[in-house]
Structure formats: structure tokens, C-alpha cells
Length: 207
Image 1: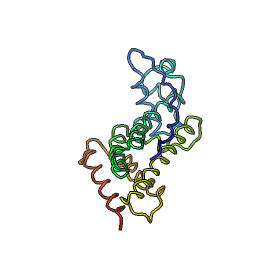
Image 2: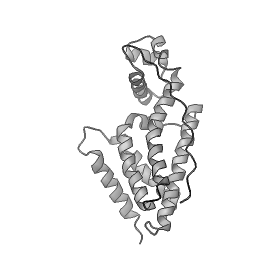
Image 3: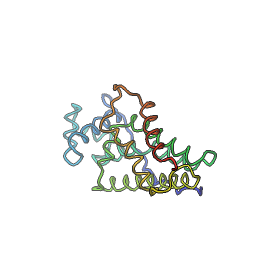
């Protein structure tokens, strides 16, 4: 496979500390509020009230609400981008094995970053930060569809379903975890990853 395009650049992160609440706590609380109330309906004042601090204390950590959104969406996208980049550039393994590995690792990434991924999946491109996040998602979709095409060319996947549709369906299954997965639930991430891979790839086997 030819070398993939480089993923969209990730802006440098801003990080400053303050006694009482560090940036990670502020971000985690903001993501929770964005998911419960919606990004547009949540203000810096709401966040300050949730944390029990002044608005100026929030600004000590971040430039504003959009900065929090950027950090949250980067948290959702950075590790997945690394997983996909490594898979598409690794020519030692078959495309099929790399695609199956991405599906499994995506389950792990989603479980580890579930609140941020939940927020990412609600993005509609209403701000420059959201537009950039959607651009990064499209890059991921393109790379995954290329892996599907390569796996079809190997004869490892059926040919009668469009590669871009296969990619969307595969990762639609993974993304559905945001609706029901709970860390304290019955099934761990390895069991879920095995189940998704088995169901998906058994259905995609050549006929």
C-alpha cells in the first residue's frame, strides 16, 4: 500500500496548573457538562459553578470554552489517529490483520476515552474547532476505507459491499459503545472487541 497522507495537524495544547483543580479536572468536568447540557448551552459560569470556583480560575487553565472543546476533541481523536496511522503504514502484516487490529484497538480507545468520544460523535461543525475535528474524522474514514480496499484485493473480504460502507458499518458498531458500555459492566473491553471482530469479520468473509 502506498504511504498514507499525514493526518491533519494537531494544535499545541495549552496547560497551566493551579492549586485545587488542575487542567485535567477542569477538562473532565467540562466534558461531562457538554455531554449533559450540550456545548452551546454550557457556559464558563456553569463550569465554574460545577467546580465551585470563580470564572477567573477557569481562565487560569484555558483560554475559554472553545479551548476546552478543542482539548476534549483532541483527547478523543489523538490516540485513534495514532492507531490508524500505525496500521496503514505497517506493511509487514496483511491489510486484513491490520484492519481487524484497528477494530479491536478502537474498542479499547473508546472505552478509555468514552466521555470525549461521546462528545466527538455529537459534533456537527458549528465552530472552527468542530470543523477541524470533522476533518480529522474524514481522514480516519479515508484511511480505513483504504485498508478495506486492500483487504478485498487480498481476497480476505467479500467484494460485493462498497469499501466505504464497510468502514462506516464497522466503526458504527464500535461507536455504538458510547450508548451502553460501562466500565463496571458485565463484559470487559477484550470480550467486547472479540465479539465485534467475530460478528463483523465473519459476515465479511468471502463467499
